[in-house]
Image (cartoon, rainbow, N blue to C red; front, side):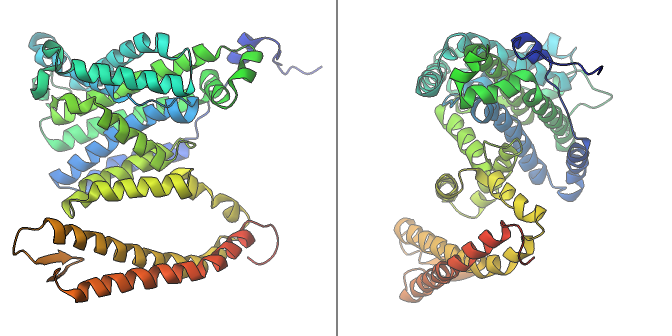
Length: 431
């Protein structure tokens, strides 16, 4: 007789208890080392500020992916949970007696609890349905709370928002968190802990059932699970981690305004999550990193950064629905077959001309913007470290030629790339 414990598939409660949570330590150790080492690579305050913003966006994007990627719930107002958590943390900062007795690293927990509290209230009626109904309810709730932010001045501070001072907290092992490097490590600690907890949540029975409810709610109901309650638990957990992100924002910037919970912020996190890839846990992390770099670094070079971010999002949805993470994971089968090298030359022949053609197209866009919006008499512009007169014909001819030639070569070599891709994903043959 075998001593192996079996699970009776006819008993849903037993199946729920039979779930397991596993964690491969290797990637998490690498991530922890990377988080600890980055300040030694990017030592400036601006670099630390960008990384802080990046990690806050990572937590928020992972929380949003608990809804969209795992539960299939499209929310157009998820920024309100991060915003309410952040505003609650600002009020705690301003409660001088209480704040002076609390170490600052505990503050994001309060943000998470307030975000979870709001999610409990909203989720009680919004998670009864999924799909379009849930999306419209989330949009309505988001707009309602955003409107309340300029009406309920006592909590949201009106148009000016609420500010505070993180240095008033109880020192934590002698740290007052006045310097940016101290705030970075606090943020890095919370992003690591939050990511681990959200990953473990995805491995729980509820997290796994969220995938089943997303794909086939009728079948999940037939197996004995309540789709409504699975969505509700996922919604509440997502609200908690969104509130943690809001608390980290309050710590980093020491001010919150209506912009932290309006529809634009909700739209940005939707863009970030889709860009990274909703089908993979690490997808939102990639999306948050790429979008933050575009928003901060690229915005220093051009006023049209939002145009490029939107174009990247549209291209991702149209051609790579799996996002950046999906694009990376597409190369796992060729790697396992040992045929990844088959793609090297076709990639070089196609992607480099395509990149040059896209840069030429961007040049045309920048020149058009400068031609239309530059001050009267301002004909000179600098593009790719080259200064020229945008009102002469030669730069336009060069940019147009680069665009046509680059994209033309990429289109010509694309069939060969497709053949190489099919070969790389077929067992046997050349390696």
